[in-house]
Length: 301
DNA sequence: ATTAATGTTCAGAA
DNA sequence: TTTCTGAACATTAA
Image (tube, rainbow, N blue to C red; front, side):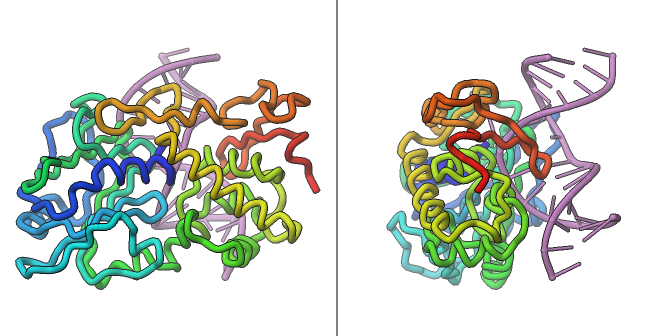
């Protein structure tokens, strides 16, 4: 579930981890297959235990915990502003968490114990711990050395963050492919942070048909798309993201998102469009994923 | 009881 | 080179 707004909500919930020392990293007992940790847990533990968290940031759908150097007294960046958003890569090593389909980064109160996959135990500050809970187990936790950061998170692998990209850059990057605009929006190498829910909502808000080839979008569509993207994502963050009917997505204290109440098209096939009331929302399949749109609000140009 | 679908990513094939 | 397909996994609905 986690797309940019949900990951940003999770990031904010653990932002107080800045300055804390990691005293252990443990995998709770579970009969389920374990998530991917690279390198292996014992090595990760050896590398991170004793170090402090220098910053808690986000790029696209990933959460990044930058670590201080071994024992040297490095300045801690206290702000919430992420240098990764500017594609500047700090000197330190970093733990990168990818929640993928069902991962949650939480302070406490996971939905259940069974799917609790990893616990970072902290000291100093009131946080105490960071939990990684993941129902499906597709999530990934990586320790990246400072030299690997630009390579693994740089513009070749991950595009600019959707809340940071300029309209010029958006047009430049997305018009580089002939794939449908909906499919291009999901390509994290072009643009980081958009997933299946928000791609549908953003295109609906912008009045763009999801099947238009990305390199054939009319010129006047780019500013609309850029504005729609910012508007939808920022509103979703304000509502702490979208909790779908399965109810797994939540942040600390069992707190769920509210943006599902504001969805215009996602998951609403056959229902009346909430904007125009002229047509039913349609569902098509693109790149093996469901796309929802309103044929009246989003006509084929 | 199968089968399909679910918020994502990526290796390998076309 | 670019784009498409299937697999990784757990769970639920049809």
